[in-house]
Every structure is written in structure tokens, then in C-alpha cells.
Length: 304
Image (cartoon, rainbow, N blue to C red):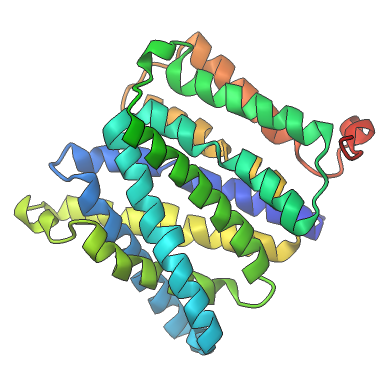
């Protein structure tokens, strides 16, 4: 039987797998004429509709939220959903996928620092080692060891770092909010307000100018279903099992492994030796931060 804590970490891993489908699906939509600005609104709008329909039929009472909760979720919808998507898609546009991915995964470092300050989570040598390993592994995986692939643009770098920081704030905020609110309630209002605030920040009507085929709408629906409604929903639920935000932050780098594997299988991307080395490093960092590992017990003391 899995402990409650291990169930939570398993949910984070499942969420990361679902997030890993986002890049391949996005490339499918780009190939059919859509731009990043078209996707931001629709993925959040579909996630809101999917969550709302599920709650209406299963637990309509959870749609009620207090005035304080409404204000909190309004802010998180704006900052944690709408702004996050604008930051990451701008980072991709101005620096490329490789650089944007590396900048996004500065988030585990932000999470570890904030968790130490806010939740008094232990800053152990094991966590720091795992953080370095997942960071280096991310760089190696997305660049295949070729730093010349990185595109340095001051605005794009700023957007990427903001995306990483925003994701970290999301993680820390969700850990706190799940103590007060149901995960479905949080998801519903996060997605709803996120879609609302994304309207002036993106170009939702631009999708109609592309004259999209039905399969494009299916792709947009899947963006709302898999990485957003299901992925983020699992991520929120995971924190109700008492997991550490710092461990969860490192565990989310599983998304990179899934994204690279999906691109190799579905898009024909090359999976070379350096990329495999990076994947091994990322996966090793994930294994290192799992709880209750006798192998690492001697490392589980606070850093001096």
C-alpha cells in the first residue's frame, strides 16, 4: 500500500507526463497555421469548460466559493495561468524552445528557496545535489551538449525567468491553498479567470482567420484536457497529500523526458547519446528526491 505522501508524488509524476504532451500537440497546431497567441486562451477556456461540466454532473456544490477565495483564485488565474502562458510562449518566440525550456526549469530552485522560507522544509544536501543534477540534465537534454543552440535575447531571457518564477509561485501557492479549498474548486476558478484575463493578453479570435479544420479544434481541446485540466488538476490534488513543494518542484522535470520521448516517437526527432545522458541525469535527480529511501537516509539532515 502506498503512503499518502507517495500517492501525492505519484500524482505529480502523472501530471508531469501529461504536461509532456503539450509540446508535441502545440507543434501539431503550429504546423496548421496557429500561433502561440491563439493557443493561450483556448487551452484555458477548454480546461474551464471541461472542469465545469465534470463538476456540474458530479459535485455541483464544489462550484461555490467564498468571497475571499474568489479574490485569491482571481489573482492566481491572472498571474499563475494567463501571465505564465504569456511568459513562456514569449520566451519560446524570442529565444527558441531550448533556451525557454532551460529558463522555465529554474523553477525548482525558486521552489526550494521559497519552501525553505515559507514552509520550513529542510534544505538537505540531497535536495541540493538533485537540483544541480536536474539543472545540468535539463541543459544537456534540450541542447544535446551544444550551447551554440541557445539563443540569447534579453527580453526573451527575462520572459523565461518570469515563467520559471511564476511556476514556482504556483507550486508554493497551491500547497497553501489546498489546505483551505477543494482541488476542483481551485482548478475551476484558476482556469476560468485565466481564460478571462488571457483575452487581452493573447489573440483568441485570430484562430478563425486561419480557417481551422475540425482536427485543429480537436488539438485545442486536447490542450485543454490533457496538460491543463487533467495535468494541473492532478498537480493541485497532489498537495492535499502533504507532499513537500521542494521535492515536487524537482519531480516536475519528468515533463522534459516525456516531451523529448514524444517528439522522438511522433515527430521523428533524433534521440542521440548526449540527449540520453541528459535524460538519465534528470531521471536520477527525480529518484533522489523520493521520500523514505533507505539508500539516502544518511543525507537527510539539514544543510549547515
